[in-house]
Length: 113
Image (cartoon, rainbow, N blue to C red; front, side, top):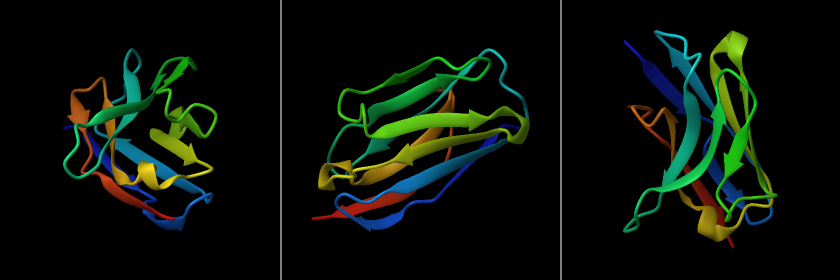
């Protein structure tokens, strides 16, 4: 009923950039947070960024502040994560979510040193 599909992951050198996309379908989310988490092998899943779907308020993990930007296109039901100045420690599977209830399948981001 609600489906989230991430795309845009890949391999990039340290200092490079990637833009992740998350296409949502099935419903609209007027009063929900949408955001990104990530999980590296052997580590806990951690919060990256969030945005209010009906609004523009954003919040970022300290580890990505100043480097990542979360944004959205409400008309397209699409969430984005622009990642700049990537570091090897950003390597993880990145997951899109709606209100931490609905989750995408994840997209792999690998940053080489």
